[in-house]
Image (tube, rainbow, N blue to C red; front, side, top):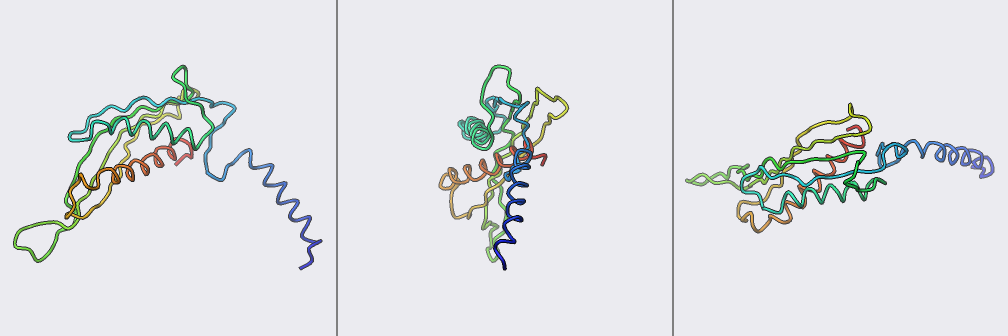
Length: 173
């Protein structure tokens, strides 16, 4: 291949990328930063029985951090362009996989499920707001107690839920 003949192609490719990078980011975030500059995440309410008392705070802080790190929006509680309000709806452990061969019924896998209800308020374009439930789960062996896996399970669930909430709000998911 002749390298001199590929120079115009590379120049055009670089020009194309430069022109369109202001309209689209590779992360898929579609925020018009000329309109949207600020956000606010209210503390989550707790309506879930048996949930750790700090879980609503953990959820709110995780969402604040996700928006802060993955967008250029600035957090404020005074006239924000967008707002998030959330409620911890459910925190439950269920038995998922029956274990065969036992005279008494038992399971080999338990599942921790967390459900939140989130309201997204777009103060710049009210028709873009939404309310939605988000849930995710973590499976663990029934030989372990929830207290043994709870911190890791909550972290994994919260990380996935924040990704889902962020995607719905900013990538037209």
